[in-house]
Image (spheres, rainbow, N blue to C red):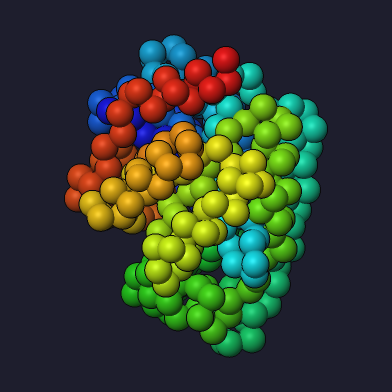
Length: 280
């Protein structure tokens, strides 16, 4: 079993890095990528323990980028050498932008009557606090009943307190990953929200023109039809294929590590080998 998309509490997951490794071992996951948002801290913390326990742990990351006014999540894998110091210094700049967005989001929530402080949010997510941490507080304080309701009512783009983040352009994210020795991959392409398969393909082809190297074919949000569509598109464009559950622990309780939602994710070990071969 393989999972190339997972999160720890170093960003917006609920499991500590050690808990995630333990969970992977119990679930029968043989190869795992930690792809926290804007940070490698979860991977760095998990690496010694994973090596000790015999879990094949890949270094990864997930960035929020912007293309034609829309957010595009970009996965990056570093199956060879870990990313350069220059790239890691750049991640610190992204983390500062995240905190600025959180500060503005707190203000927007307060303006619509929510009793919340930045300190409360950062007590959950520390420097990498994100919207799931806001949602958790909204549930705890009974402004909403579920995490999903928190997003729908307050935090999503249509929510009452939505706050846009200063995201890097897609081409810059791809270029920085490539310079750092990484493999940039478009995450969960179904979330691009294109109205037709043709429009979706045009967006992905544009990313290929910027240097994007892979496509996340299998994901908890992808049904069998979507998986087939993305597999054919990746083959046509000569892209690497990846997949993963997008596990966040208790923040997304319907998603299981290694198998996704209701067992809809299955990633072959050959895909890990191809990622490594591409860096050879």
